[in-house]
Image 1: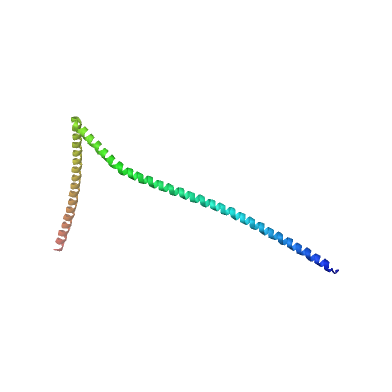
Image 2 (image 1 turned 45 degrees about the vertical axis):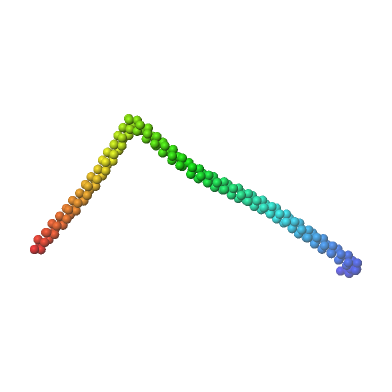
Length: 165
């Protein structure tokens, strides 16, 4: 191989240095571009995340407001009930009293109502009497069974005593 002159070596060295510098700048530019892309992507992601967080906060606030409104409605209904129940009870008592007056102020209606009471009383008395008679009949049967059982046991005992004597 031929030897190089000093000038040639310097030129080759400068050329190599320039290539290295160019390659380094390219790599640095790629790194910077990649870093810029990552930063941009991260910023977009952060913006989306912030948007989702804001939407969630808005939903939560709306739900909380709705819950409070529902609670206030419930309190209002309870207050309304405390007013309406006594009024309804008073009206019901008034209607019953008016019905009673209407019934007993008319002779025919009063007679019908009293006859109905009489029939209901007679029916209840018959049912009660039948129930008592059924119970009494059942008790008599039970007593008769027990008495018959005792008689047969007594007869068996007398028979055993005779056989022993």
